[in-house]
Image (cartoon, rainbow, N blue to C red; front, side, top):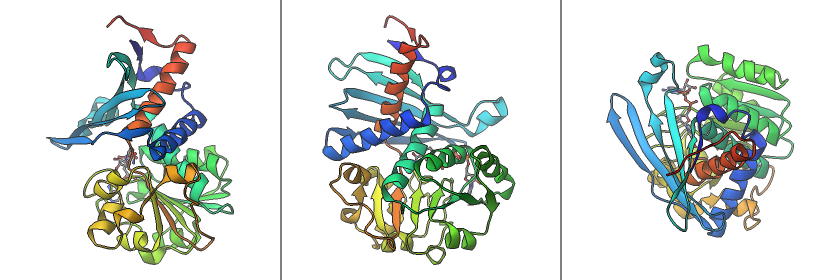
Length: 320
Ligand code: NAD
Protein backbone atom coordinates (compact mmCIF):
# COMPACT_ATOMS: atom_id res chain seq x y z
CA UNK A 1 0.00 0.00 0.00
CA UNK A 2 1.28 3.47 -0.94
CA UNK A 3 1.14 6.49 1.30
CA UNK A 4 1.27 9.94 -0.29
CA UNK A 5 1.20 12.54 2.49
CA UNK A 6 -0.35 15.97 2.12
CA UNK A 7 3.15 17.48 2.16
CA UNK A 8 4.03 15.63 -1.09
CA UNK A 9 1.02 16.90 -3.08
CA UNK A 10 2.21 20.44 -4.00
CA UNK A 11 4.21 20.21 -7.20
CA UNK A 12 2.88 16.71 -7.87
CA UNK A 13 -0.62 17.21 -9.30
CA UNK A 14 -0.81 20.48 -11.23
CA UNK A 15 -3.84 22.28 -12.61
CA UNK A 16 -3.57 20.66 -16.04
CA UNK A 17 -3.35 17.09 -14.69
CA UNK A 18 -6.31 17.77 -12.38
CA UNK A 19 -8.29 19.20 -15.31
CA UNK A 20 -7.53 16.19 -17.54
CA UNK A 21 -8.32 13.66 -14.78
CA UNK A 22 -11.63 15.31 -13.89
CA UNK A 23 -12.72 15.80 -17.51
CA UNK A 24 -12.11 12.08 -18.14
CA UNK A 25 -14.02 11.22 -14.95
CA UNK A 26 -17.08 13.29 -15.90
CA UNK A 27 -17.03 11.65 -19.33
CA UNK A 28 -16.84 8.17 -17.74
CA UNK A 29 -19.76 8.98 -15.43
CA UNK A 30 -21.88 10.05 -18.37
CA UNK A 31 -21.03 6.89 -20.35
CA UNK A 32 -22.12 4.82 -17.32
CA UNK A 33 -18.61 3.47 -16.77
CA UNK A 34 -18.33 5.12 -13.38
CA UNK A 35 -20.74 6.05 -10.62
CA UNK A 36 -20.74 7.64 -7.18
CA UNK A 37 -22.11 6.04 -4.05
CA UNK A 38 -24.51 7.97 -1.81
CA UNK A 39 -22.78 10.69 0.20
CA UNK A 40 -22.65 10.38 3.98
CA UNK A 41 -22.38 13.68 5.84
CA UNK A 42 -22.84 14.05 9.58
CA UNK A 43 -22.86 17.03 11.92
CA UNK A 44 -20.56 16.21 14.84
CA UNK A 45 -21.58 19.24 16.91
CA UNK A 46 -19.84 22.56 17.55
CA UNK A 47 -19.85 23.25 13.82
CA UNK A 48 -17.84 20.15 12.93
CA UNK A 49 -18.93 18.25 9.79
CA UNK A 50 -17.64 14.84 8.78
CA UNK A 51 -18.50 12.63 5.83
CA UNK A 52 -17.60 10.25 3.05
CA UNK A 53 -17.66 10.60 -0.73
CA UNK A 54 -16.99 7.39 -2.65
CA UNK A 55 -17.45 5.67 -5.99
CA UNK A 56 -16.38 3.12 -8.54
CA UNK A 57 -14.89 3.65 -12.00
CA UNK A 58 -15.09 0.22 -13.61
CA UNK A 59 -13.07 1.11 -16.69
CA UNK A 60 -10.51 3.29 -14.91
CA UNK A 61 -10.24 0.59 -12.18
CA UNK A 62 -10.81 3.05 -9.35
CA UNK A 63 -12.56 2.23 -6.09
CA UNK A 64 -12.26 4.35 -3.00
CA UNK A 65 -13.51 6.92 -0.57
CA UNK A 66 -12.64 10.42 0.58
CA UNK A 67 -13.18 10.82 4.30
CA UNK A 68 -13.10 14.27 5.72
CA UNK A 69 -14.93 17.36 6.73
CA UNK A 70 -14.85 20.78 8.28
CA UNK A 71 -13.40 21.43 11.74
CA UNK A 72 -13.79 25.13 12.58
CA UNK A 73 -11.43 25.02 15.59
CA UNK A 74 -8.46 24.01 13.45
CA UNK A 75 -7.44 27.50 12.33
CA UNK A 76 -6.52 28.36 15.95
CA UNK A 77 -4.30 25.26 16.00
CA UNK A 78 -2.58 26.38 12.80
CA UNK A 79 -4.06 23.66 10.57
CA UNK A 80 -6.70 24.03 7.82
CA UNK A 81 -10.36 23.83 8.82
CA UNK A 82 -11.05 21.49 5.89
CA UNK A 83 -9.42 18.10 6.44
CA UNK A 84 -9.66 15.14 4.09
CA UNK A 85 -7.88 11.92 3.19
CA UNK A 86 -8.49 9.69 0.17
CA UNK A 87 -8.28 5.89 0.44
CA UNK A 88 -7.99 3.83 -2.74
CA UNK A 89 -8.75 0.11 -3.06
CA UNK A 90 -8.19 -2.56 -5.70
CA UNK A 91 -11.68 -2.93 -7.27
CA UNK A 92 -11.11 -6.66 -7.85
CA UNK A 93 -9.86 -7.69 -4.43
CA UNK A 94 -10.94 -4.83 -2.15
CA UNK A 95 -7.40 -4.60 -0.79
CA UNK A 96 -6.28 -1.05 0.07
CA UNK A 97 -3.77 0.33 -2.41
CA UNK A 98 -3.18 3.89 -1.26
CA UNK A 99 -3.79 6.56 1.36
CA UNK A 100 -3.44 10.09 -0.03
CA UNK A 101 -3.61 13.54 1.56
CA UNK A 102 -6.80 15.12 0.17
CA UNK A 103 -6.73 18.78 1.18
CA UNK A 104 -4.92 20.38 -1.77
CA UNK A 105 -6.38 17.76 -4.13
CA UNK A 106 -9.91 18.85 -3.10
CA UNK A 107 -9.15 22.43 -4.09
CA UNK A 108 -7.59 21.35 -7.38
CA UNK A 109 -10.39 18.98 -8.37
CA UNK A 110 -13.08 21.53 -7.45
CA UNK A 111 -11.38 24.25 -9.48
CA UNK A 112 -10.92 21.81 -12.37
CA UNK A 113 -14.69 21.15 -12.42
CA UNK A 114 -15.67 24.78 -12.89
CA UNK A 115 -12.87 25.26 -15.45
CA UNK A 116 -14.23 22.29 -17.41
CA UNK A 117 -17.67 23.91 -17.36
CA UNK A 118 -16.14 27.15 -18.64
CA UNK A 119 -14.32 25.33 -21.44
CA UNK A 120 -17.48 23.54 -22.59
CA UNK A 121 -20.24 26.06 -21.78
CA UNK A 122 -18.97 29.64 -21.60
CA UNK A 123 -19.15 31.84 -24.69
CA UNK A 124 -15.89 31.67 -26.67
CA UNK A 125 -15.63 35.48 -26.56
CA UNK A 126 -15.84 35.65 -22.74
CA UNK A 127 -13.45 38.33 -21.43
CA UNK A 128 -14.56 39.26 -17.93
CA UNK A 129 -14.49 36.77 -15.06
CA UNK A 130 -16.68 37.58 -12.07
CA UNK A 131 -15.79 36.00 -8.73
CA UNK A 132 -18.28 35.75 -5.87
CA UNK A 133 -16.39 34.50 -2.82
CA UNK A 134 -12.87 35.17 -1.62
CA UNK A 135 -12.14 32.25 0.70
CA UNK A 136 -9.53 29.49 0.43
CA UNK A 137 -11.02 27.91 -2.71
CA UNK A 138 -11.44 31.16 -4.62
CA UNK A 139 -7.77 31.47 -5.64
CA UNK A 140 -7.77 27.93 -7.05
CA UNK A 141 -11.00 28.66 -8.90
CA UNK A 142 -9.60 31.82 -10.49
CA UNK A 143 -6.33 30.16 -11.57
CA UNK A 144 -8.13 27.21 -13.21
CA UNK A 145 -10.71 29.47 -14.89
CA UNK A 146 -8.02 31.67 -16.43
CA UNK A 147 -6.40 28.56 -17.94
CA UNK A 148 -9.75 27.62 -19.53
CA UNK A 149 -10.50 31.02 -21.19
CA UNK A 150 -8.40 34.01 -22.09
CA UNK A 151 -10.03 36.38 -19.59
CA UNK A 152 -8.79 39.96 -19.78
CA UNK A 153 -10.13 41.19 -16.44
CA UNK A 154 -11.35 39.81 -13.11
CA UNK A 155 -14.03 41.51 -11.02
CA UNK A 156 -15.18 40.30 -7.64
CA UNK A 157 -17.58 40.64 -4.73
CA UNK A 158 -17.42 39.08 -1.29
CA UNK A 159 -19.72 39.11 1.74
CA UNK A 160 -16.64 39.89 3.84
CA UNK A 161 -14.99 42.72 1.85
CA UNK A 162 -11.80 42.49 3.93
CA UNK A 163 -11.10 39.15 2.20
CA UNK A 164 -11.11 40.65 -1.32
CA UNK A 165 -7.32 41.08 -1.21
CA UNK A 166 -7.05 37.33 -1.94
CA UNK A 167 -8.79 37.90 -5.31
CA UNK A 168 -6.68 40.98 -6.06
CA UNK A 169 -3.45 39.11 -5.23
CA UNK A 170 -4.41 36.08 -7.32
CA UNK A 171 -5.39 38.22 -10.31
CA UNK A 172 -2.05 40.06 -9.99
CA UNK A 173 -0.23 36.70 -9.92
CA UNK A 174 -2.05 35.86 -13.18
CA UNK A 175 -1.16 39.25 -14.70
CA UNK A 176 -4.79 40.42 -14.82
CA UNK A 177 -6.42 43.63 -13.60
CA UNK A 178 -8.84 43.21 -10.68
CA UNK A 179 -11.71 45.41 -9.55
CA UNK A 180 -13.95 45.00 -6.50
CA UNK A 181 -17.52 45.68 -7.63
CA UNK A 182 -21.15 45.64 -6.46
CA UNK A 183 -23.26 42.58 -7.29
CA UNK A 184 -25.17 44.69 -9.85
CA UNK A 185 -21.94 45.65 -11.62
CA UNK A 186 -20.67 42.08 -11.43
CA UNK A 187 -23.77 40.78 -13.24
CA UNK A 188 -23.67 43.61 -15.78
CA UNK A 189 -20.00 43.10 -16.73
CA UNK A 190 -19.07 39.45 -16.15
CA UNK A 191 -19.28 36.95 -19.00
CA UNK A 192 -18.56 34.12 -16.57
CA UNK A 193 -19.41 34.13 -12.86
CA UNK A 194 -17.97 31.67 -10.36
CA UNK A 195 -19.69 31.47 -6.97
CA UNK A 196 -17.61 29.82 -4.25
CA UNK A 197 -19.00 30.73 -0.83
CA UNK A 198 -20.51 29.01 2.18
CA UNK A 199 -23.71 31.05 1.90
CA UNK A 200 -27.15 29.79 2.94
CA UNK A 201 -28.98 32.61 1.11
CA UNK A 202 -29.01 33.56 -2.55
CA UNK A 203 -26.34 36.19 -3.19
CA UNK A 204 -26.61 36.57 -7.00
CA UNK A 205 -30.11 37.66 -7.97
CA UNK A 206 -31.93 36.95 -11.23
CA UNK A 207 -32.12 40.68 -11.99
CA UNK A 208 -28.29 40.85 -11.92
CA UNK A 209 -27.77 38.32 -14.72
CA UNK A 210 -27.69 39.26 -18.40
CA UNK A 211 -28.21 36.90 -21.36
CA UNK A 212 -25.17 34.88 -22.44
CA UNK A 213 -23.67 34.60 -18.96
CA UNK A 214 -22.19 31.33 -17.76
CA UNK A 215 -22.40 30.69 -14.02
CA UNK A 216 -20.35 28.02 -12.26
CA UNK A 217 -21.99 27.58 -8.85
CA UNK A 218 -19.39 25.76 -6.77
CA UNK A 219 -20.05 26.55 -3.12
CA UNK A 220 -23.35 24.74 -2.57
CA UNK A 221 -22.52 21.18 -1.54
CA UNK A 222 -24.95 20.65 1.34
CA UNK A 223 -28.68 20.73 1.89
CA UNK A 224 -29.78 24.28 2.69
CA UNK A 225 -26.83 26.13 1.16
CA UNK A 226 -27.60 28.57 -1.69
CA UNK A 227 -25.63 31.08 -3.73
CA UNK A 228 -27.88 32.17 -6.60
CA UNK A 229 -31.58 32.93 -6.87
CA UNK A 230 -33.59 29.91 -8.02
CA UNK A 231 -35.17 32.00 -10.81
CA UNK A 232 -31.79 32.07 -12.57
CA UNK A 233 -31.85 28.29 -12.90
CA UNK A 234 -35.45 28.49 -14.13
CA UNK A 235 -34.41 30.48 -17.21
CA UNK A 236 -30.99 28.90 -17.72
CA UNK A 237 -29.80 25.65 -19.23
CA UNK A 238 -28.59 23.75 -16.18
CA UNK A 239 -25.64 21.35 -16.19
CA UNK A 240 -24.05 19.48 -13.31
CA UNK A 241 -21.46 16.90 -12.34
CA UNK A 242 -24.14 14.49 -11.05
CA UNK A 243 -27.89 15.01 -11.23
CA UNK A 244 -28.67 13.10 -7.99
CA UNK A 245 -26.38 15.41 -6.00
CA UNK A 246 -27.47 18.52 -7.90
CA UNK A 247 -31.12 18.12 -6.84
CA UNK A 248 -30.37 17.06 -3.26
CA UNK A 249 -27.29 18.97 -2.07
CA UNK A 250 -26.44 21.23 -5.02
CA UNK A 251 -27.58 24.66 -6.15
CA UNK A 252 -30.50 23.12 -8.09
CA UNK A 253 -32.11 21.82 -4.86
CA UNK A 254 -33.93 25.15 -4.43
CA UNK A 255 -35.22 25.55 -8.00
CA UNK A 256 -36.40 21.91 -8.01
CA UNK A 257 -38.10 22.27 -4.59
CA UNK A 258 -39.84 25.45 -5.81
CA UNK A 259 -41.11 23.67 -8.95
CA UNK A 260 -39.08 25.99 -11.21
CA UNK A 261 -36.83 23.23 -12.60
CA UNK A 262 -37.34 19.53 -13.17
CA UNK A 263 -34.67 16.94 -12.47
CA UNK A 264 -35.05 15.71 -16.07
CA UNK A 265 -34.05 19.13 -17.42
CA UNK A 266 -30.59 18.98 -15.79
CA UNK A 267 -27.77 17.65 -18.00
CA UNK A 268 -24.58 15.97 -16.85
CA UNK A 269 -21.54 17.91 -18.08
CA UNK A 270 -20.10 14.54 -19.11
CA UNK A 271 -22.71 14.38 -21.87
CA UNK A 272 -21.34 17.64 -23.29
CA UNK A 273 -17.76 16.37 -22.99
CA UNK A 274 -18.76 13.15 -24.78
CA UNK A 275 -20.58 15.06 -27.52
CA UNK A 276 -23.97 13.53 -26.61
CA UNK A 277 -25.29 17.04 -25.75
CA UNK A 278 -24.44 20.14 -27.77
CA UNK A 279 -23.94 22.32 -24.66
CA UNK A 280 -24.58 26.07 -25.06
CA UNK A 281 -27.43 26.72 -27.52
CA UNK A 282 -26.39 30.23 -28.57
CA UNK A 283 -24.82 33.51 -27.53
CA UNK A 284 -27.90 34.63 -25.59
CA UNK A 285 -28.39 31.51 -23.51
CA UNK A 286 -27.62 31.57 -19.78
CA UNK A 287 -25.81 28.42 -18.72
CA UNK A 288 -25.39 27.23 -15.13
CA UNK A 289 -22.98 24.56 -13.96
CA UNK A 290 -24.00 23.17 -10.57
CA UNK A 291 -20.71 21.77 -9.28
CA UNK A 292 -21.59 19.70 -6.24
CA UNK A 293 -18.31 17.77 -5.92
CA UNK A 294 -18.41 14.01 -6.43
CA UNK A 295 -16.33 11.23 -4.88
CA UNK A 296 -15.03 10.09 -8.26
CA UNK A 297 -13.29 13.46 -8.67
CA UNK A 298 -11.36 12.74 -5.48
CA UNK A 299 -10.43 9.23 -6.57
CA UNK A 300 -9.28 10.47 -9.99
CA UNK A 301 -6.88 13.12 -8.67
CA UNK A 302 -5.69 10.87 -5.82
CA UNK A 303 -4.91 8.09 -8.26
CA UNK A 304 -2.95 10.55 -10.44
CA UNK A 305 -1.08 11.72 -7.32
CA UNK A 306 -0.10 8.12 -6.48
CA UNK A 307 1.16 7.46 -10.05
CA UNK A 308 3.29 10.62 -10.01
CA UNK A 309 4.53 10.12 -6.43
CA UNK A 310 5.62 6.53 -7.16
CA UNK A 311 7.33 7.68 -10.38
CA UNK A 312 9.24 10.40 -8.51
CA UNK A 313 10.05 8.37 -5.40
CA UNK A 314 7.80 10.52 -3.19
CA UNK A 315 5.41 7.74 -2.06
CA UNK A 316 6.08 5.55 0.96
CA UNK A 317 5.22 1.86 0.67
CA UNK A 318 4.02 -0.15 3.64
CA UNK A 319 3.05 -3.82 3.92
CA UNK A 320 -0.62 -3.93 4.89
P1 NAD B 1 -13.74 29.59 3.24
O1 NAD B 1 -14.25 29.35 4.61
O2 NAD B 1 -12.28 29.80 3.05
O3 NAD B 1 -14.48 30.87 2.58
C1 NAD B 1 -15.87 31.02 2.72
C2 NAD B 1 -16.40 32.04 1.73
O4 NAD B 1 -17.81 32.17 1.93
C3 NAD B 1 -15.81 33.42 1.89
O5 NAD B 1 -15.81 34.08 0.64
C4 NAD B 1 -16.81 34.09 2.84
O6 NAD B 1 -16.76 35.50 2.79
C5 NAD B 1 -18.09 33.54 2.28
N1 NAD B 1 -19.19 33.58 3.25
C6 NAD B 1 -19.17 33.15 4.54
N2 NAD B 1 -20.37 33.36 5.11
C7 NAD B 1 -21.15 33.94 4.15
C8 NAD B 1 -22.51 34.37 4.13
N3 NAD B 1 -23.28 34.28 5.20
N4 NAD B 1 -22.98 34.88 2.97
C9 NAD B 1 -22.20 34.97 1.87
N5 NAD B 1 -20.92 34.56 1.83
C10 NAD B 1 -20.41 34.05 2.97
O7 NAD B 1 -14.29 28.38 2.37
P2 NAD B 1 -13.69 27.76 1.02
O8 NAD B 1 -12.73 26.70 1.38
O9 NAD B 1 -13.29 28.85 0.12
O10 NAD B 1 -14.99 27.03 0.45
C11 NAD B 1 -16.09 27.79 -0.03
C12 NAD B 1 -17.29 26.89 -0.19
O11 NAD B 1 -17.01 25.90 -1.19
C13 NAD B 1 -17.67 26.11 1.07
O12 NAD B 1 -19.06 26.24 1.24
C14 NAD B 1 -17.30 24.68 0.75
O13 NAD B 1 -18.14 23.75 1.40
C15 NAD B 1 -17.52 24.66 -0.76
N6 NAD B 1 -16.79 23.59 -1.46
C16 NAD B 1 -17.41 23.00 -2.51
C17 NAD B 1 -16.78 21.99 -3.21
C18 NAD B 1 -17.44 21.34 -4.38
O14 NAD B 1 -16.91 20.35 -4.90
N7 NAD B 1 -18.53 21.87 -4.88
C19 NAD B 1 -15.49 21.59 -2.82
C20 NAD B 1 -14.86 22.25 -1.77
C21 NAD B 1 -15.53 23.27 -1.08
